[in-house]
Image (cartoon, rainbow, N blue to C red; front, top):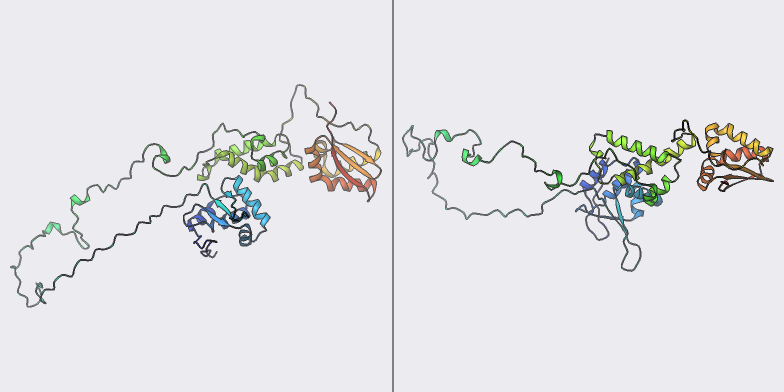
Length: 374
């Protein structure tokens, strides 16, 4: 893959940080498009590594997605705690370019101290040619053969590349690794790398979640929130990679909710239950509508829906509901707004096919909800 080219922001400043791009490629987002959006943001990081500014249109064009898709994936990165978004306004009151930051990214420290200038010594006076030469052919040596040279002994010779290092100049060069200071990363100035999840971790209540995660968790069937929290805890307890350390486990749980919602709803449509049946004791019957007034057409539609979806899904989503037929209109009355929305979003085509087979091709399907009488 070709390396991205350096670029200038709207102020004419260089906006390229190779370290930020490398950091972004090492993050795990669970989705290739989300990863591409994160890398695209990192490409616009300023050299200091503390902020980047890019318009949503420019970012979407580079990743080759729509603006709405780019916004959706940025919201996902915000929920995961990888990206922070700040909206900016121009001096005229209009909407400016968005600013983004990476809370967990720490740019490398770069020293900007200028190197000391090299001192230039004044030119030395030149001696007459051959004045200091000794030992050459025909030279008149000033010392008898076999005499020791002054200022240098045989023990001082240390071979080729000798710099005249003596034992006194080697003091303090200890090759043993330094002892780390007490207190962990905070004591030696390193950045906080987070903590592992506690064995007694429990998920926050659904009402305490951020708006996006709360809206998704409220769509889950009964018992799914506790079951996914148990899977989340077991996964991170068994994880041995450095990613098992998090700065904020609540944000990590919100990211898990965003990724798991699709699978949870597909499992619910397939009839998967997350709550075990009660064995023994008295069980309060589930609330359901009175279906004693339904006539033969409603019973035929029920039979076709059961044959299409199976007994498990029918008993969970349609047995408690009431099938009201008025002429050529079928109104499916659920016990709650959640059940009504789930029927419309997941089974409208199946119910509509059964309705048309009984009431004709011009029949109309409607969805409604009422609370059953106590």
